[in-house]
Image 1 (cartoon, one colour):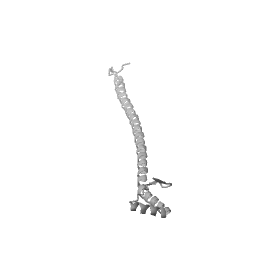
Image 2: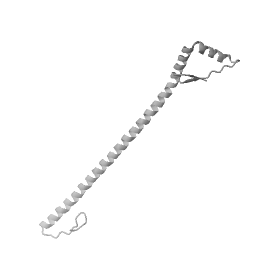
Image 3: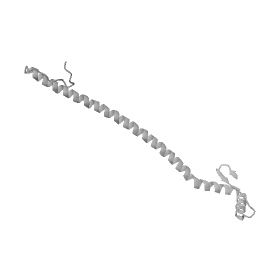
Image 4: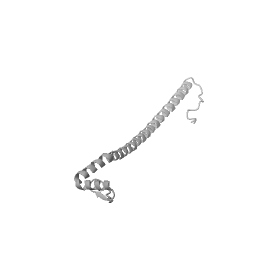
Length: 126
C-alpha cells in the first residue's frame, strides 16, 4: 500500500509475476510519475468532489432548517403573545361596555326615582 501525499489517494501496488497488467500499470506509474500522480489527483477530484459538495450542501441545508425552525418558533411565540394581548384588550373592552350599559340603566332608574335592583356585571353588590 502506497500513500500519495497531498492527494488523499491510497494506491495498492501489488505486482505478481504472472500479472502482466499490474506490471504494465506499475511501469507506467514509475515512468510517468508526476503525470500519473496528477492524473490520479484530477480523477480523484472529478469523481469525489461531488460527494464533498453534497456533504457541504447537506450541512448548509441542516443549518438553514435549524435557522428556519428557530424563526418559526419565535414567530409563533410572538403571535401567541400578540393574540393573548389582543384577547385581554378585547375582554377589557367587553367588560367596560357591560359596566357602561349597567351604569346607564342605573342612572336612568335613579332619574325616574325608581329603585334599581339589577346586580352589577361582576355579580357583587356593594
